[in-house]
Image 1 (cartoon, rainbow, N blue to C red):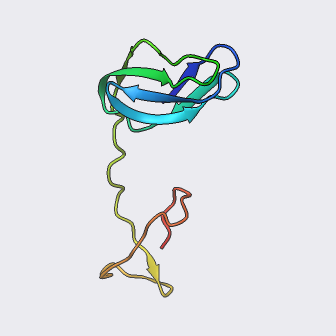
Image 2 (spheres, rainbow, N blue to C red):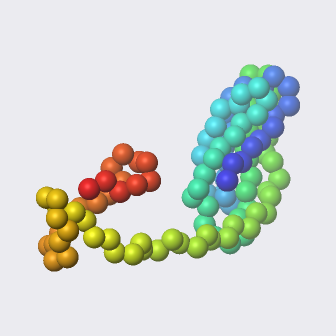
Length: 110
């Protein structure tokens, strides 16, 4: 979810984004806006708000709380078992194989 705060005028500084009293993150103001993206919101109804710290020419200010319902997405669960070729032959009684997404491309690497 991306949270955005609009700041009037030529304001500078930072905006803190909150879920209730929990700080979610802080973002700089850029061209009158600050935005923060998170995937860490818990399921249920959240109370989201932003607080602008102010700068030399602009007073601090807070947004009203906005209620947002977050629904948990279903898990993909475990994938079916898979056979692996070892040394050119397929073995069904292999004692161990290590596979993980080492390079972050979403595919396991052996």
